[in-house]
Image 1 (cartoon, rainbow, N blue to C red):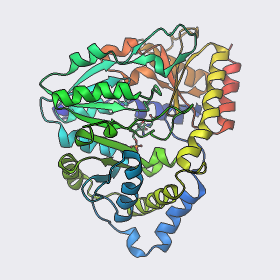
Image 2: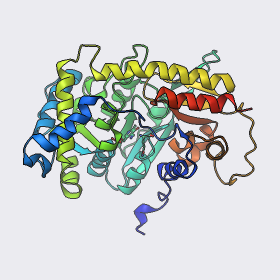
Image 3: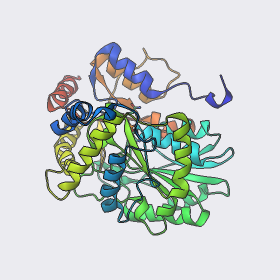
Image 4: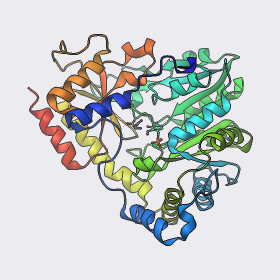
Length: 412
Ligand code: PMP
Ligand code: GLN
């Protein structure tokens, strides 16, 4: 194999999705809803394929289907407070993965450093390595809030530590808010601190905002690209999978200034060229409808978070009852929980793994409940900071959460 694949052959999703298939465990692992998206979304796809002319089933414009880039530009005009040029400032990709890949391949050069904040969505690291870059990791630190309930807000970026990571080689920083797996939603001041460093060191910000609409208790999702001087150096990434609860549709987008976005387009045009047309047409219709009711409670952007809030609270209650210590997320649809109090015999598991890997495998096989180990979201050196937590996904039917509750209550 080529050198660029060194050390990236293992993948947490490959491993743990297979474990669920093998064990048929109740699945609170990989992040996806187990319920239908809104009816109009799936109907829109059928209608797109059947009733909007034969060409909707053929290739469309490479950088994005015209109706979709128009709809996204309209919606994000509102969110970003600036007009977007649909042709030059929007790129449609295969999922947010595609946007991350195009951003990193399009902007990172051999020898460049890319700052990644831990915990991070796992693919950032292998993508930077494949581009010939060097990931530079900085873990969020846990402050003692004095409360026995942990919150994702208790995890913070140390300003001096962050500043120390910027060097003359730093090309980019990847920020993920709301964060997967932690659920942290960065406050404006925290983003401003990152922005100041980006501007000072002439660094690009790759802002992964796929959970942009999922925040709780009125926590505001602040967009990096709206901070002064940041539009010019930010790629904002979104996902239809998250926004419309259709993760299997694998459609994402990158938004940014044309002088940066054109390099993402170069990557895209040469390795993907164009994304599925009916999916783009259906997502365009989704955005058009949501745009027309953006200020109403019915708007799916708001309605989904409302639907998730009781699931989040329920999950926290269930976990607390048996001795897990949940970290209440401010956003996203995952919840970390500390497992130190859960006394289990893990001697049957391969000892050469982080504690959380052993715990999750043991729980999946022996309790029939699947989750994801938190250390998958940390670099090799920092896994010890992470391995006392596992990640639960709560965007699930109440009946699925009830099954999980039963397993947890029968634990002892
Ligand atoms: N970024 C984050 C933070 C994610 O959680 C995900 C999960 N899928 C992705 C990117 C990739 O999204 P997509 O499925 O649209 O490729
Ligand atoms: N983003 C989802 C998660 O974190 C799915 C990731 C994946 O399947 N690669 O669970």
